[in-house]
Image (tube, rainbow, N blue to C red; front, top):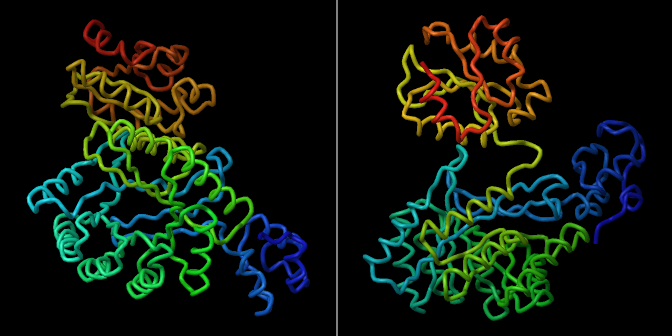
Length: 445
C-alpha cells in the first residue's frame, strides 16, 4: 500500500537542507507521496531510509518495453485514470495475429498485409505496432519456423503466443534479440516461462483465471526478482474484462497495489469481425495497453487506430502544423494566397478543399499555438500583425505578383488593419472550407 506523507517523513534526514528543491523535508515527503518528485532528489537519505521508501518512490504502474530499435513500443507507465486529469503517456499497442498453421505462402501474404496497415491522419503517421504469432499447430518446430518467417519479412516487434514453454524456447532461438513479448505464464508453466523470460530479458505476460489468481502469480514472479511483466486477468466475457481492467488500473494507481502495477493485454477472440472490432474499441477505452486482433482489413483496423489517436492525444497540447508556406498543386506568381492558422484540423479541412478546386495555390499557415481560427483570433494569436509578419517571413512579395491574400470569412474584421500592416489587398473568403472551391472558381482573377 502507498505510504502517507507523514510515514515517508519518518525516514527522511529532517535537516530541511533544501537540496531537493523544496523548503522542508516535510514538503518533500508530501510531494513524494503524491508522486510529484523522486526519492533520488534527497542527497542525504540513509541506505535504510532508501530501502524503506522504495515502494513510495517507484511509479504506480511500470513502463514495459517490447522490441528494439525504431519499432520498439512502450506500454504502461500511466499515472491517471482519466485523460483530462493530466494526460496518457503510452498509447495502446495494436497487435495483429498470425497463425503458425498457415501455409508458408499464406503466412507471408498475411505479414505483407500487416505491413501495409500504415496510414496518415491529420499529418501524423499511424500504424499497427506488433505481430502476434499464435502456436495454433501445437508443434514447436512449426511455431519456430513461422516466427522465423515473420522476422524475415517484418521489423515489427513480436508477441509469442504459446502456452508450451518448449515451443517458446524454440521460437526464442530465432527472435530473442528482438525482445518479443512472451504470452503467457500461467499456474501450470510459470517456472519455465519465467526462466525463459529472465534468460532472454524479454517481457512476460502473466495470465490468471481471475484478479486474485493473477495477483498471486504476479507476486510469485516479482518475489523471484523479475518485474518485466504484462497482465492478463483471463476474462473472456466483455463485461468482466472491462471490470477487471478497470480494477487493475484503479488498484495500481489509487491504492498503489504493487502486484497489479503493470500494463494489461487483451486478446480479442470473437468469431465475427464486427464483434471483435466492437469489443476491441471498448477494451481500448477501458484500459487495454496491448490488444491482439485477427483482422487485417484496413476498414476494420483504421477505426481502432483513429480511436486510439483521439484518446491518446494530449488534451493540453493541440496537434499543430509547422507554421510555414505550403504549396497546393504547383502554384506560380499568379496563384492565390490563402491564410489560416496552424491547428491541424483546420489545415486538413482547408487543404483538400483547395486541392479539389483544381486551382494551384499557396497556403500560408501562421503560428497560432494550434488554435482554430476564431479561437486564435479571440486569443490574439491570429492578428493582422502576425499575418503581415508571416507574409514577410515567407517572402511572398517575391513569389506572387498580385499582392492579394484571402483570409477566412470569420475574421473579416481583420481586413482593414491587415491591408495597412502588409500593403496587400485583402479578400474575404468563405466562412466554411467547403465553400472554397466555388469561391476560388468564381472570385479569383
